[in-house]
Length: 508
Image (cartoon, rainbow, N blue to C red; front, side, top):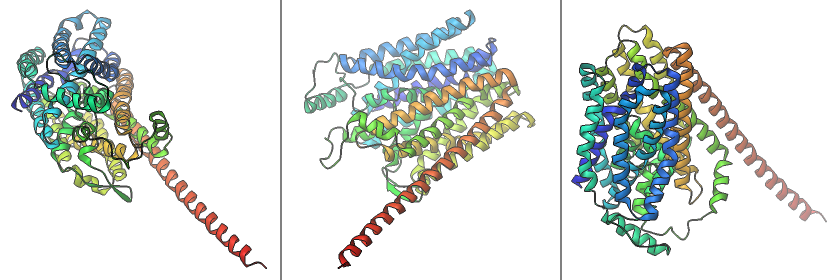
């Protein structure tokens, strides 16, 4: 699978040259923090439905190669157009960003489906996808150095060169295995036109549909320090299963098979299991009844509030940290190096994730919130630091604030999901996290930045995270106490009924 390794390496190297520095580019053109926040809010909200629509169109028409090449080329041209359109005002720029997100959303979804279908084992996918993390980590530092010496235009030049080179492996990806796999699925389920255009399979329903369902997560990963996609590569590359405790209890949950998204581990689960029908003893539920059951579960509701709060923190970091560093006199070299540190930190945490999560998923979530508070507080104190380079120690915490949050969240979703709704629960998690959470963090952070400055962004974010942590912890405690009370009450009633029956039997 050399072509897959080459694609991931080149494509994510190209993205790392441009996306992390776009907000800095907008700010230097005179756009306000409020306008930058609006752009940051729209990006995940557009990519969320767009990924589903594009992958659905590819599935319906069985023209995955054509859709991939069209969206790849169009999104590249739209990205490069930013350098010219951004000078024409906020309205044209906003329209361009929306179009760019709409076309870029399905690229990684389709490629991941193709690569997973071609892999003979689940761990093989991680070995391919790991090259994307390598490209992101290395090229982000190189891009930052180039920008600091030659200007922001180096970002567009580097992106253009690497993306054009990436077009070669894009055109050579093997669509045959995906086509054969999906033909078997269509035959089994009795729904298939088997026509195709060029060996591309229809309906990447086993992998691509789940990814499309969580397109916000996949796209967010592409533009947000290569997060979600790198996450699942490393999850799949680590231990296949692990005992993961939830609170004080433990349940078996494969940490490498709990995620979803463009490269989500729910796809990895489906890659290994989609060829087999669900076991006969696995209880199934009606879809909408299952959704209602999931949303009415107090633990699930609390978890989604936690995901929203964590996403809020991520939106503040990714939208405004570089603007803050620039304000403090930090160079683009420092910014690029900070991305490399975050990439290395999350890679280590993902590698050791099964061991970390042995302490229990709920405890992991508490650890995530603690890391968020330390990280936000660190950023707020940078205004008093002698040098902005002191941001680098805080970036190590990205391993906990993203990698542990993502891995733990995916595993928690797998535990909370009713039978048959595993992908739906993952899609909800990623939509809340990368869609609503990151979008809310971007827009609120922009308003705070506009009125009170960059330091206030992280003070407010620290307060929001602290309140969210406290409220969800109290809610979890209340649910636990309520459950124990009901359990003891039920036992009391059962014992009382038995005693009453004994009394009645003993009466003459």
